[in-house]
Every structure is written in C-alpha cells, then in structure tokens.
Length: 377
Image (tube, rainbow, N blue to C red; front, side, top):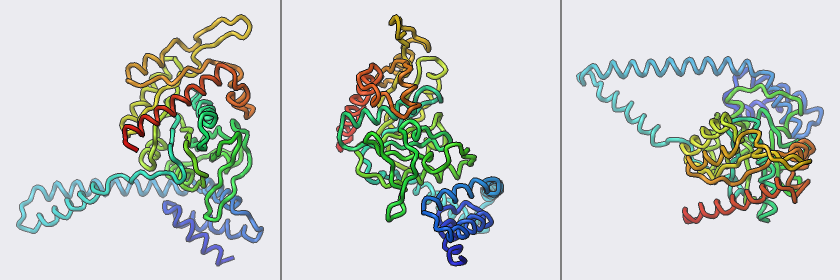
C-alpha cells in the first residue's frame, strides 16, 4: 500500500504542482487505500476529482498566499529599481541593472506558450457566444452533425464548458470513457460524431466548485489527453462569455476559426460584439455569425413573429465586416430534440431548422477552405 501511495504522490505532484503537500498526501492516501478494491483507471480519475473538490478551500488559501507574495515581490522589485535609478555607477549598480534587463529580455523572448495542433485534428472550430441562453450548445451540436453530413472526413465535438456541460444530454451519451494504452481518454460516439465532455467524468448532478487553476488544468486535460481518431473538423462548444477558458485555448492551440451565436435582441448583440472583438485581439478569424431564434412561425396559422427583434445580427455583421452564416428559426422541435438527445439535424432532417444548419455548415467549409488558400496551406 505504501508503494502505491508513493507512486500516486509522485504522479499527482507532477500533474498538479499547484496543490499543497497536504492536499497531495490526502489524495494519494485516498487513492492508495482504494487499490485493494481493484478500481478501474476511470474510477481512480473520478476519485481524484472528488478529492480535489473536497480540498478546494485548502488549495485556494495556498494560492491566495502565493498571490500575495507575488504582489509583494513585484512591489519590492519596482522599489529596488527606482532606488538603483537614483544612483550612479560608482558602486557597481550598472551591473545589477544590466542583469535585471537581461532577465526581462529573456522573459520577453520566451513570450506566450507556442500554439500547438491537437493530435489527429485538422481544423478546430470554436462556437461561442457572449451570453448564455442564446442557443450556442444547440448550434455547436447541430453544426457538428451537419458537417458530418457534408463531409466524410471525420467530425468531433468537444464540450469546453466545465461548469455546465450540455453535450451528454444533447448527444444522448452517459457512459464513462475508457483509457487507451497511453492513459488518454477515448471519446464516446453517437450519430457518427466523436464526443468528449467533463460531463462524462463526473456525476450528472455534481457541482464543479473549482477555482481558476483547477479549471485550466481540466481544460488542458480535455484538449491534450483525449485520443481522437483522425478528424477533419473538431467543433468546440465554448462556455458563455470571454473568460479564462477562451484565452487559454487561444494561447494553447491552433484555432481555425470562430462561429459566434446570438439572438437578434440588443442585450445579446452587445455581448456577442465583445466576443467578436476578443477573437480579433487574439488573432482567431471569425468565420461568421449565426442568428438563432430569428423568427417564430405559428404552427397553426403560419404567422411569423420576430419575438427577439428583427435582423439585429445582420446589422452587427455589417458593422464588423463579417458574414452572417445563417438564420435559425425558433422552434419547439429544436428544444425537444436537444432535451431528448436527438438533435434536429437527426430527428427532422427536412425541417427549416435542419436546412439552416446544413447551409451554415456548407458556408463554414467554404470559409475554412478560403482561409487555408489565403495562408497557402
């Protein structure tokens, strides 16, 4: 048992260096005590997640102390530099200043982490929205299915919303992923789409009460510890807003382009504009906008009502200089399909909504081809 304890301690310390010694020892002890029960690798991962959640407060206090020390160190360095600048070189101050300058140059030379390509993935498409509740996840799921209909190169779907994963329900998947020989997670599949989500690793009703560093660790695990079969398109369902997950992804991996989803109402458009500007700042091309819930058509009389406003996304697209990929009408079928795990592209392929998603997918394919042509690749 003590041998297992030491192995788990070394593994956890290597993978989660931000954890305190106390937390590492507690998690190692919990895992080592479970080895006699012959737990599967996935059960060990889930046990680790539960243990990490239990000791969140411990880790948070440790990080807070580190943040305070970091701020104090910056203040001391700034004060020291000001002190040096007020003296001449008689005491060898120039040499100390030069060392500090060399260190700064080295930090600037290294810069941000280099973006890498997700193994076996040719094109990565992020589906984002500035605000929750505009149909981003529904769009991501149906876009992936529509891409699979339009192209046989292989399509994957990655749920990056750690706190509110929707993919398991929408794609009717509830099993736990297995691990390959390299301890990478094998994605689950349905409707011909490879899928991965944090929702596969935790209980359905479990609340993820995690701070930023733990979320970023989970994001990196999903990005680089998933064993995708060769994919031509990987659609990533992003969390709402423009937070840490978006910035981390833009720094860590090559993103082919972004699709931004919004309803026509002004409050949603305001946040969608922020999302478009964020992608522009991190040099991710915006493939286009999707106007979701554009109009409601009465199923009895055929009367059309613009519940959330008229053509707001079209006006914003013109101002931003990007294309509207398509309009998706508001429909009860879309909601029912999402709740039952049968997206509209699968459950009603001839419906106006499914046709809209197919048209959006066709434009996305053309946009990506044009981008690669411009970049000469």
